[in-house]
View 1 (tube, rainbow, N blue to C red):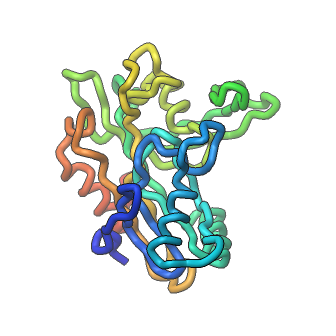
View 2: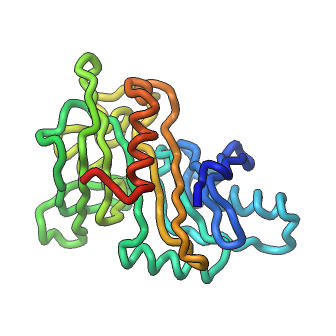
Length: 254
């Protein structure tokens, strides 16, 4: 199923990448929390429920299942389940690793290898909402693993563009592991404050989400290209669209 053919908008200014009776795929705006948090700010889950209720005139409560999450400052492709059956089947897809996600990020410096796998133990401090790399075996620590691949670099800006695929879904995982590698994400105040300026938007984007439809079993491909603004515009749009085409064809580049 081609998501781009279904690109419409819903309030508040969120592109709908895919929608049927079972699923809702959208382009998450940056700086909107995925679900309700301590900030009390409007969150994506409740905004989408309200939008569905308004668009379809649904009485009572609207069901919308959260399949995966994106950090508040991160934008891009996300999928939600509109029925409990779809949510359960998508959860199985995630567990059996048939649920594909690929991110692009812009990092400071150049990773030591053109591509590699990062394996760390991460520990979250709930009080400060920060995550750190700790020695293996640390109580409360969780294994974290990702693959990265350098797609290009800008020597003048001392920045590199990388593709990232997660093998685990830990809080702030990409941000923490890339920072620990010595290449914090552009704009990340939490894990790269010494290299970033206040007000910069974190350069991490959910480019692609792909999975078999929970009912029809046909492939569903959601693609969201990062905005054409600095630092994303250091690379031509075709860099991102070509990667998306590869991912839709089942090639992840690793």
